[in-house]
Amino acid sequence: MSVFLSVADTLNFSRSSQALFMSVSAVSRTISRLEAEVGQPLFQRDRRNVSLTHAGSEFREFARRTLAEWQQLQRSLDSEGELAGEVSLYCSVTASHTLLAPILASFRAAFPSVEIMMHTGDQADGVSRVLTGQDELAVTIRPLQLPSRMDFLPLLDSPLQFCIPASACLVRDKVLGERDAGGIDWESLPLIVPERGTTKDILDDWLRDQGIRPRIYAQVAGHEAIVAMVSLGLGVGIAPQLVIESSGPGQNVETLHSVAELPALSIGLAALRQRLESPLVHALWDVAGQTYPRCV
Image (tube, rainbow, N blue to C red; front, side, top):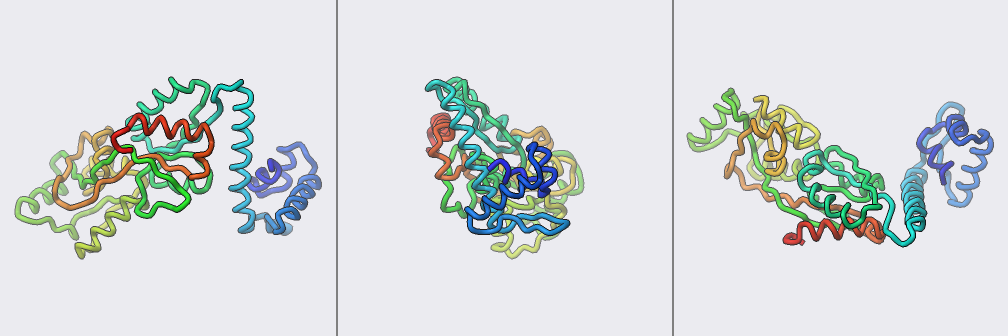
């Protein structure tokens, strides 16, 4: 399994052989035996290039999960009955120091031998990282269509809001002037929107329902980046109230309450249903539910 994963990562038999302290022919024979067991080629290779086949891409995710579970089992067996090991968790920067803080404090107190491997980035990537096995859990917004093999634990709801710069500028003056005059001309406003994710899906639906052809100033990754750009006076943004209130640049933006009927976002934990069979993953899931009990 480790030989396959090395070649899948490097796409180079020579580099993998050096990293594994094996001959190139031994690496090649190992891959050939594995392909015979699987019944399909896992790599396409010629004299210059190596690439994964479709079957190889699927087997890579299986191999990653299997290796992680084996390592987790080894750590658990070494702990003499105490729950121990590692849980991989993905979240945005805002979630890491707001929503997650009380969960992790309770979890560490209950399971001091379990390590949390945290990765941060755009929350819109959370579902895909869980589906591909890169992380076991993700703090994310519930997608409009939850994948059938995934479970979602709601922790809190946050209204989705439009926001404008708090300081005087052309964007702020235009929005407030039009609002006070009876209606905002959305098609003339520079909008700063997410490039992907549930917020983008909701915004696209709202714009379509309103018959608005938006003027998109920028599409960016992450709600924090949207709030930061709005604070600089570059346009009107959209983000969860939680992000606006928690991020540093949020002090320099103003929320436009009641200018649009947008649904509240459900923010929580996402995990593959089969991964919840792991005692470590299930323990963190349970602690999160106990920390935010009113939404469970």
